[in-house]
Image (cartoon, rainbow, N blue to C red):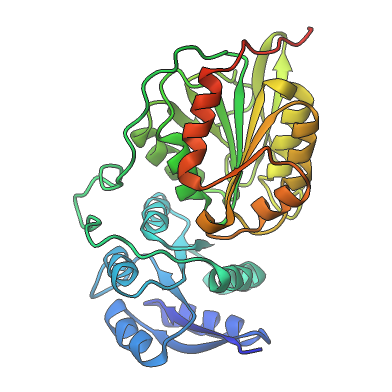
Length: 366
């Protein structure tokens, strides 16, 4: 089988060297070139035609986001971003995912050599996923992410729907996603009206990035979007995102639903894990839950989504054609967890239609 050919783009000679070494240690991939800036990378990509590139977010000679924007308009290809663990780095990474990057690696600001080597398996796993992912061309009219541009305003999105004619406050929507999920979640959340049922989300993401992710969504949505806080009441009109590096599950306190945020052991190699959220939904919410499984690699959450279905929830799964990676949705379907398999752009309308016609929520005996 041919090796995955990778070009590394980073202004740090140390990072270029480390990434090259990590990639070349793998039997199924090869670093065919390393560029110090986007202009050099442009020529290298033309000459070498790689399968995947890794791209630093802060680059000389041309802004890394501007380079990514041009690349995804003119020559779409799988890109894995390499981002620093800073507030600015997280914000830039969220914009890069909007522009079409498949995934990102969070590199430490200090101890780069040790940090990257500790992340070697994560880096190479993400390159493998990127190599098999579906890449879409960025529309020519997409706004340039230059200085002074409000990132939220730069994202085109569907106008939010009118308020629901009736929404049971007992309903809770539970969403699980991984690779490609940041944009998929945005597409589901933006149409939700201000009186939407509460939405609880687990997206595979490391610490330091979910705050920026939540803030960007909060600027785009009618509902309030924030990281979940341990012990807070889960309310309609709000979306709660599992903080990076922490599991999120749902529990009851009297007649109220509450968020439980904890840093217990990884589940299915993930923290946060969709399995943890969905199992709690099956146990605590039952027929008042709506489950949504979006794009992602692996099987996290698939068996727990079947538990949700068995407990009475109604579940939607993203279809293969609209997924960046059809891993988690495929496994959910194989587990018999799906009631409906839909293209991404049909999931929010389907949920809203179901909620508008739904009977009052089932009340649990306390």
